[in-house]
Length: 139
Image 1 (spheres, rainbow, N blue to C red):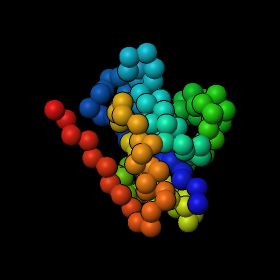
Image 2: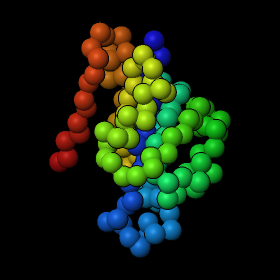
Image 3: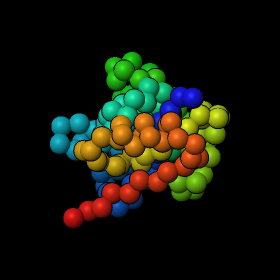
Image 4: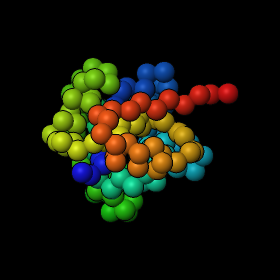
């Protein structure tokens, strides 16, 4: 069984307007790189090499242009476009064909966490459980 990754990078970013009038919020810089690089790095650190990026129609082209095939990141990207906002459940439903019977990690494209997911991913991958939810406590 292969552990796959799903990055949810849709939404309109309405709380960040006017910045998100011209770009996807996940492409905005945080420190020295676009925000979406952080969840990509988290998935890579967990050993995930096959990643589905789900985005909306407004700025999909900019995400495709930035990320490309995944070669520069050492992964393979697949893309799905969410035609209209429907929240996390409708976005995850677009991952069904991509995931198949494999287990997967879903992460929001605006999550910035500096801890590795590797131990959690390894345990999840080898156990029989069908799902696991990780939460981060803010101090």
